[in-house]
Image 1 (cartoon, rainbow, N blue to C red):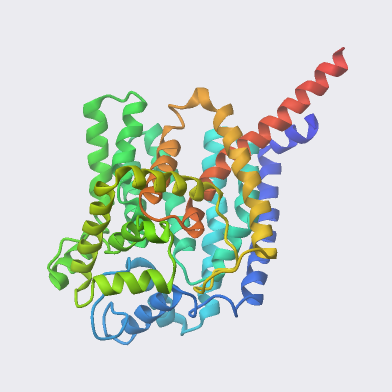
Image 2: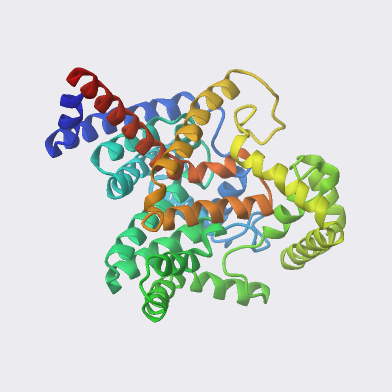
Length: 419
């Protein structure tokens, strides 16, 4: 064990393992997307929307799902990526999935960089392997969903922000801000990244005014890629929407107690559509948001109880079946595989958080990200798929826990030999 750990700490051995394991992971993901073309692609629930918008962009009909009316319901970067790829290489769904494999593999490399910076070389290697081979993070590459692109940009934004926290120069703050802005153009969930960075700077005792100045630089570059899209939304719809509407849908759905805060497919859509018939996308979003907040204010205790349920759902739900947009059935091999791969990561994550508790200031940015991401979904809507982007963050700590367990075993063996 001692010799193995020493070898893992060697830069030469690390590079060799990264390339060998990375190539194996890349090949396995390629094989997976080739063998599963019939379950993902343009027929998937959200995938058909992204594909339709991309095809309309390609045909010169603008950012529209039906080819006639502009849409505000979808963040723009992923459909633009599809349209750009189609324009360059033709409309080949498999090519998109292979591109997502590259994003997924690159995400494992970013997990290695982040975990190495937080906990050291060997935990970084462990995180690299876990992110590369975790079933949920592999399978999501086969679907026309935003996760593959978003996870890559999210981890890139985290890595650059961590470097900026250590050495807050304006080029690093600018690069981190741009990456965060691009992630937000993929999924608006990261809109409050500048605020989290400010909190992390203050927790590191950087001083109020220096922290505000650095956050301002970060925020300016964060807004830079978002602003043109916000202007498009205002010119097209007359509303100052930074990225997309849709928060009203998930807030209402997640707090609709007759359905227990669950998305019940056709039933949920039927109720929402009846409430918002004849409204445009902006007014629909405003109405659903207002109705959800009204329900929460009218019965705060019931709303709080539902949020407690959603807290446990966020951490413990797994998919009942492969995501296809249809109502999923309980049980089965897929559910078992996901549970057996996810729950050990969750347990190790908890152990890693505890073992690293004395370094909470240094790790505050990651803790803030996890807390914010969880709270946002607990307040709105919890779906197992929505947890996928933070799985790499759980793995940072899980890898540290595994490393500490190995080191402790080594120390106990050494102490026993000395006795």
